Length: 144
Image (cartoon, rainbow, N blue to C red; front, side, top):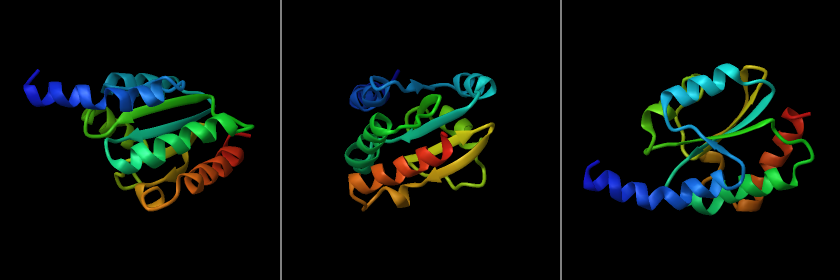
């Protein structure tokens, strides 16, 4: 591993752990994504994580709080890390080709199809509470 990759690995470690320690399964390889998605049943919340400030201060906290508060929770919590696990992220994005790449972003998957997508444009420049409330409403609709 070159010095840059080693440095970035250390920088993003807490950003990864923020979701992983809250029940999210990290998908870091194409094989992880394909195997998980092939076996997926029910609903899944997929977070496309990122190093940017709107992921750190908005998306991840909003997702964590929405999951805690949700009456109807997704069956699976998944995450890929854009810019870090590039091939895994590209493969995950291929499951919803109608949506332009966006990170951070949040996808709701139900019964083998994309049910809802929250792109960066609906995260950046919003308050964390607004994002949490938006996601909470979507979880109640999709995960019933």
